[in-house]
Amino acid sequence: MSNERFDLHMSDSDALMWNIEKDPLLRSTIVTVLLLDRAPDWDALVKRVDAGTKTIARMRQRVATPMLRVGPPMWTADTHFDLSFHMTRLRSSDGTIDSVLDIARNSAMAGFDRARPLWQYTVVEGLDDDRAAMVLKVHHSLTDGIGGMKLLMMLFDLERDGQPLSGQEPDAELTSFGALDLITESIKHRRRRAVGIALRSFGSAGSIGRSVLSKPKDTAVDAGRAIGSVARFLEPATNPKSPIMGSRTLARSLGTLEVPMDDLKRAAKATGGSLNDAYVAAVLGGLMKYHQFHGESPESLRMVMPISIRDEGAGLGGNHFTPARFLVPMTIEDPTLRIAEVGRLSRWIRDEPAIALTDALAGVLNQLPTTLSTAIFGAMLKGADFVTSNVPGAPIPLYAAGAELQRMYAFGPLSGAAANLTLLSHCGTACIGVNVDAVAVPDIETFLKAQRESFAEVLALGETPLT
Image (cartoon, rainbow, N blue to C red):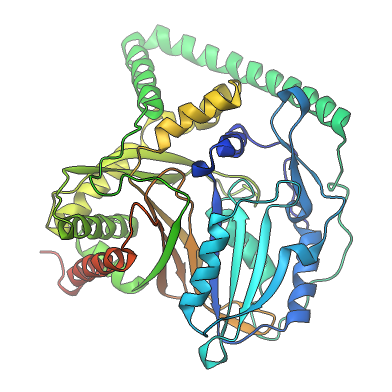
């Protein structure tokens, strides 16, 4: 296994995500629950993870912020790295999956120790039928969902009796920076970025100049469209649209849903949509039913959907997505029409010019005092009602120290919303992790029931070909 290379400096987007945690409602903690067919061999697992931390540099690095904020936060070696702090072993209180979700819920509600690397493993033994679970907690600045799956693939085996990773010492990338080093490296980083921006701007200026001369009207239209897109991206939305899910607290409730991937794909194909269109449409239907149960029928809700901008050469570290916010209808009862509308909205939002400008916009916000940038970005996020995310998982069996991975649920951060529903596929099953604000959604079982009913309606579309 080759060593993964990582940037020493956070991107502007990651730095903004890190800085706005001044407001705890905007924390970016991801918790993943892995259900195993049996307890992993603890000693073998510790050795596996230890070897992985020496291969994946980020797992032995902590975040350090240069004095006077002369540059973005940097990743520096944790010179006091202690694997036992990051790996714990518990026994289930009653042998149920609910006991595992309680552990995951408490983990999701707790912030990270910022003096240490931003990850934790907890093995939960003693589940019914001799099963076990793992609760993995990572900070979103460490990696995004797709990068997280790559990270898991590097730490897991492809067969039950897999070969252990070869031991090695951390490479030279694991450098520890003192206060003066952080300032020096940050100044160098800013200088390199300035040169790069100048060169790109020079090239862009030439391109724009040629465009103005050859197509002046089209160039003006494109510029106006970009300005309008940026304005929509930064538009404050402090008040949620939902009349019943308006509270925002640090309390959490977790739940799970399961859907056969093939059935969801058939439903999407039968209606001429994508798998993500069918998934999001099912979530919208569940939210409609949940509101109707409470006697409410809002015309629309505000959804956040991460748009992946990850290319094939992107590494494990950092985030490669843009959080797109847009209104979605709550009045389309017909699931076929709802899938079509989700597809139309998704194509529109992916074509927004601001999507490509996310890091640049984050860079502007990072120049502001942290309190101000937190307030601005918080005003953008806290008006969201819910988040949907779809992460491709492993299509093949995976093993952790002899234990087979049976289910994998990702509970994404709320980041100011009332609910987050994340689909993570594993071996033909769409495992959907549901994370809600326990005050905004005090009856999660009713919420889950509404979602199950809606998914059943969407899946039924795949039983009859489109005519």
